[in-house]
Amino acid sequence: MQSLAQAWLIYRLTGSPFLLGLVEFVSRAPILAIGLLGGLLADRWPRRRVMIATQTLSLLQAGAMAALTLSGHITVGWILALATLLGIINALDIPVRQAFMTDLVPRAAIPSAIGLNSSAFNTARIVGPSLAGFLVVTAGEGLCFLLNALSFLVLLACLLAMRIEQTARPAPMDAFAFLAEGLRYAWQTPHVRALLALITVLSVAGMPYATLLPVFAGDILQAGPHGLGVLMAATGVGALAGALRLARRGTVRGLGTAIAAAVTLFGCGLLAIAASTTLWISIPALVAIGFGMVTGLAGTNTLLQSLAPDPLRGRVMSLYAMVSLGLATFGSLLAGVGATYIGTPLTVAIGGLATLLSAAIFWKALPGIRRHVRETRLLPPEELAPQ
Image (cartoon, rainbow, N blue to C red; front, side):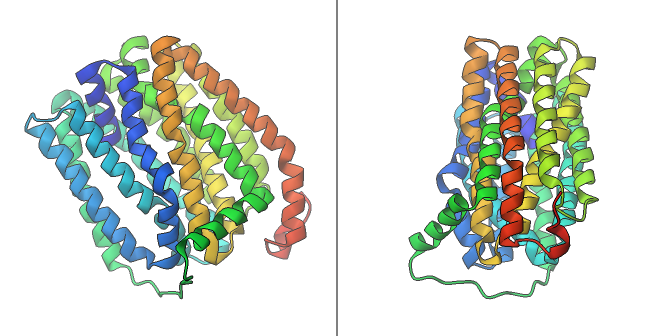
């Protein structure tokens, strides 16, 4: 709800696609700048305690957005400042939250757990934007921000109710050596390197389409904020379908092929929405985009967490967050610039072509990745059979 309301608010105040991209940039740039610090916290501090702190800060940020908007004092400067603050909070929270999942379930249940987590998130992506579109029209953006602030009370109550057995955390003398160990593992491990490279391309070229959805809804489709809610909900429907399918897997066998196919579908969906001029073509295109995007992202998350050594998991997930969210800052900024100078449809079409190219390269690399996993015995014997 906050994402849609914030995007529509900045577009209503300015009518600028560039500022849409800039807000997305400042909200994600801290993830790229200090994301590794979140990985360090995840591997050295109790993850539940860190999450309690970050969720409290997120509550305060959403509360400030609500207060300023409802009182009529919101400005572009305040939006940019608070979006930057949220980016800093998320840079610390996301690696911890991703790694925290493995504290809750056995290692064998990681694929289902990540799929269920993604299912819950994408259910909210269906309900939230639709409700936000209605509330923006009837009551304004401020109510969306207020409801978001109140929702963090539920998150904090859940975290406080958990009883997690604390495991020993490594405590190296030098934090820089600790971070360097994670970077060295990622660079020297073929499957980690290939998966992070794929997500890098998606983040820069593919996922920034979402930054331009208000332009599609307002200028191209003439559908207004309610139409924007429908478009975002359509993405959520596809994303939920992909997440539920992943939750049913129970194994990572064949997941590399599924990721490559999903990224191909993602690229085709981007080309379709770039060519669309009607809501009824855009909706199924966005369903395909949501399915392909979440299957690719959650599938990559699953493989990285399933194959990562326990002591390195937080740092690996901080790298995943940096490329999947942090690098998207540049994609969002480029999308805003591209939409301003060459048009929104052509910008999204270029992203679709780059996404298809990355899928083809990853598909070609799959045999080598499978061979490495078998040779290093990173999975149980029953999952190491040739596929």
